[in-house]
Image 1 (cartoon, rainbow, N blue to C red):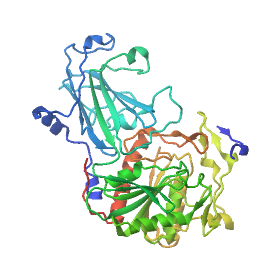
Image 2 (cartoon, helix red, strand yellow):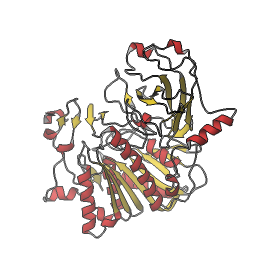
Image 3 (tube, rainbow, N blue to C red):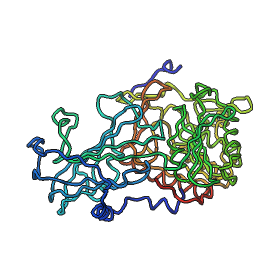
Image 4 (cartoon, one colour):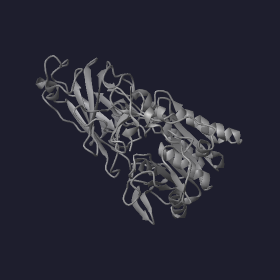
Length: 489
């Protein structure tokens, strides 16, 4: 690794467990009797395939079934191929294009069973972008296609529009899709399905109230509903995809921008704590928000702000910190016109990974007993509600696992340790997103003009994202008295 010089820096829980794969045989039976099956197919002449790839009869006419065809991004789907020859080798390739035209792709190699059937919830992928049995493996294992700008991350910018996932069935075990000859292969079958961030009936409302800037998402149906404020980190801008998902699960969710958006401060060095107080007051005064308490969720820098906000606002009864910090770090925050104490990072300790990405993990100083650093620690004992902390053991941005323990240790000191739950995931990095999306261990950070190493191993990261999202939904449901029904697309 290389050092950088200092001069470089100028729905509610009983129903969540039911969101599993649809019953495969039920789907197939439905398709047998339906006049309008939920599949899209494209037939081609199998003679067009290269002879060294073709491994089946020329009369091959299989079905490729995806169910449901339209689903939330955090909902499991079923992918089934039937009508193959027994023990036939096939390849399934999935591809999607992000909102910035970035392209992601995955594939798996499968062998049909004796009935000529492949169900990826039961049939292992022998090789490809993932291996083993995993019903959602073709989605979380997607990788950025070669030849594109390094460090692009799949991040939904327009939550009102779905991602279109193109799934293709090829005969044989096809390798190297970047190869010209392979690119010219035509699939036996193709299907396009949708992955959404908003369920039907969710309302998206831009917010410009006083100096508040953001987007409010209201669930379908009659309120009031539990309210949550969602805060992202130093990426800045307005990021809506988690808030829209929360609304799809029955919460009123405010995606709150706090810098680098509209007329807000351009950099995170000019933040005022009162801005976040105003957001809480605005949410609690909204007629569609329950008055019994408010949830706040933050990731990275947003977790600091969520915790600090909760120490001042007794109405905040549930706090989720994803990749949290126990202190105010790196950037000042003003309260009543005066800057609060914060821990400065040390530029000389920032390193470059072998692929040229910045690693910040070692650049934050350990706690000390001197006044300024002690003053930077968040007084979490003042928080009235419960706290859920989600950490990755391979976080390369900062020591989230260690800082989460410090939060709970401080709470124990004040007799409140039972109010804090920590979930730490091995092989998991800093960016812990909602499930079934391409995992990301490295991405471009516009604040630094370089790529940042986040950490994480794809399979373990995928598990962490699935498991932690369930915990987050359950936590808010339990602590914010969610009683409305699960919404469906």
